[in-house]
Amino acid sequence: MRRMEVAHEERLARNESLFRELNERINEVAGTLGADEHPYEFVCECSDSQCTERLVLSRREYDHIRAVGTRFVLAHGHVTAEIEHVVERADDHLVIEKDGVAAEVAIKLDPRTA
Image (cartoon, rainbow, N blue to C red; front, top):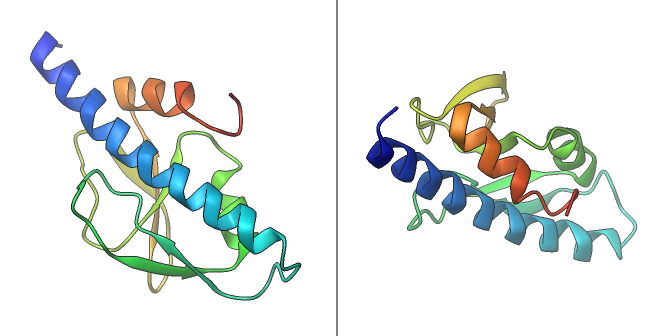
């Protein structure tokens, strides 16, 4: 893989990891409320740094996705095929798993393992 392609994939993965960090904070605050099945608004964890899509998930659903460090939650139509593939589909969101360099970055920046 060319160096420029690697840098591009790393940037996309870093964007997604930034949104994941925000969702981790949302999940943390929601956890203080003690209602794991209550719906909360999380942000789409896609690679588009301008994305403002919101996804409604329970803490239990979000924790299921986050059980694997290379998985992220995205709105439909937000998949970047060059760095990820869909592993689960729901009515209002997708669960994707990172591939290659993007997976390495996702694991390195995973706040649950840092």
